[in-house]
Amino acid sequence: MVVKSQIKLIKSLHQKKYRIKNGMFVVEGIKTVKELLASDFKVFKIYANDEDSLLSLPDYTEFVSQNELRQMSNLKNASGVLGVFYIPAEKPIDFNDWVLLLDSIQDPGNLGTIIRLCDWFGIRHLVCSSNTVDCFNPKVLQATMGSITRVNVSYTDLSEFLKDAKLPVYGTFMNGTPLRQVDMPEKGILVMGNEANGISRVIENRCDKRIAIPQFVAKTAESLNVATATAILLHEIRR
Amino acid sequence: MVVKSQIKLIKSLHQKKYRIKNGMFVVEGIKTVKELLASDFKVFKIYANDEDSLLSLPDYTEFVSQNELRQMSNLKNASGVLGVFYIPAEKPIDFNDWVLLLDSIQDPGNLGTIIRLCDWFGIRHLVCSSNTVDCFNPKVLQATMGSITRVNVSYTDLSEFLKDAKLPVYGTFMNGTPLRQVDMPEKGILVMGNEANGISRVIENRCDKRIAIPQFVAKTAESLNVATATAILLHEIRR
Image (cartoon, rainbow over all chains, first blue to last red; front, side, top):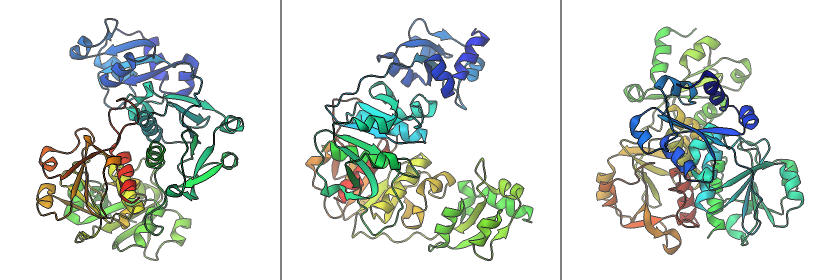
């Protein structure tokens, strides 16, 4: 049986302020829990409520009732396995490669998909503005499909960050230079902006180059979704 | 006041079988409603519950109470404007350009994003397997951001469709030829597969070429999300 205070703690971790306060986060689903167990992340607790999952999980996994799991879960249908891990310390950024910056990304699905893209394209450092959605938000974690273990995500004031940047800064804008006219260097900083408003003015002023993904036909679709635009840009960077 | 039978009809349209039965679908939000009004789609009814929206909508728009709108809406927070339109007849496919085929796409957000991508990259014909999520599903429509008015979506048996195909058929597979080693012709058929299982065996047998988006580093992320993979492929096709 899980004590009430523990259930209360775990439920609180669905909110950012309690994740920060406790330095922990929750993941659900056996696949993601196992990916995190196999990574550098430090585990706090694992809970499971089916015998099959228990067999493939560490000895210290606690068996819980479906009702207890439901109380701890953030999902409509709790998945049977829930893990609590410690939020790792942010790692120093390696400027010997491309670094991706996100300016005010709000949608958890978009951030999760972008983390998964970074993993695919070998981008190890993702730097987010302080107001970007938290990468340990349950919906973000779900969308990363385990990629959170291989991409270092940090949060900071992007304007301050860019002030000292030694690499060229590429910002994406609707009216930027079409991608095919731009030679992408071996390393640099790529900035993607907010879903509705794009890159904020203060960050725009710190961009060295303005680039755009060209539309094939006359202006029809208003814009690309930020995650799909990021896919195309990372693909171009790695060509 | 909206009569009960009308509210019942509109609510029923949130389900595919009633959309098919009645040949109608629902969209919400003034932006999307206006995009549809400005398109070839035929309107059945428009409802609004705020005076500001009424001013910019056609004369025949019906003013409704917030409660009535809430009853008709599929959203947690109804957006103030709701439109009911007729499902258009499927248009004949133009094989003088690339055609995109979707094999069993299940996630409404993915289909919506792919429709938006087709619009951006000027792909006018999207052919879906019969078991692909319905393009008039409210969540799909929301994710298309109005692009549904500029992309012809049809549903059919893909295997039968491909039997008579005169264009080369490119299927995306994890173990396909890396994209950068493939010359994409001016026109062809591109097939994207299901989120979890990829392209089904019967469709795989009808593909002339197997292509893949190369990963930058050693195998890390398991796969790309199907919408982000489609973004990269359409970008390559239009280079």
